[in-house]
Length: 279
Image (cartoon, rainbow, N blue to C red; front, side, top):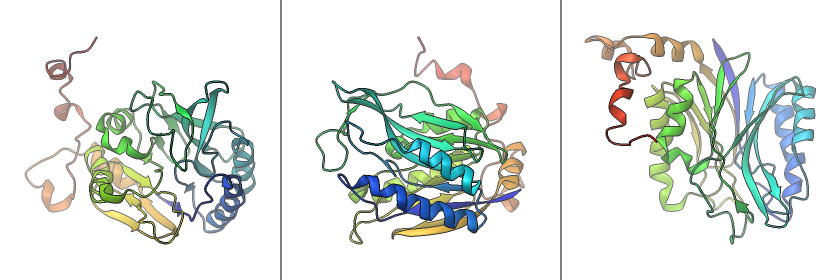
């Protein structure tokens, strides 16, 4: 089964003008729906807000757009916890085409507090959450994660073991010297989990170095370092075939990734407590 994903790496409006990203998002969503995409994926904190106190909530409007254009929308915002302490969850949301259903992932790693305070873009007291769920869609299971959590293989692996075939990983801003390793790890998360990983980031000027990518276990379907909008076709049947397969002496003639690595022969949970004891 092939589906299309619209990947958006925009020139974003930074605070205090981040509310203008809502109109920009609508334009991209309408275009993605017109182009036949099943999902449209935006960066972390797009359309925002980026700061506490949060002066708007994009979720109702994004649900409205999802229903109007009949598309899944993956986007970023914050979820206020306490106005006095300026605490908030960093949030990735998936709005469903019914205009009612909302999937939410609250960032889990690191434990916090962390870098979202004192900068020129974000300004809130980050609070870590404790769950990384997976979500059913008519196209397949979806996992949501965020930005530098690409460096934490436990998150994507946990989701993949529970069936997530597409991992949306919206990211924040220019990676600078981290860019090469970040790119490597994005593809690595796809390879080791036999999944499709989708990421993009905010760009505030043409001088920024972007990192938009749709990576599969056998190939990188798409990538861009520039502002972009691209509709990328992915083959979920291939993902399912690789997951159901069994590695053999002839596998390397037909497969660009190891077959069946989420299955029992490759998983040895009885050994893992030896190097990271559970509670």
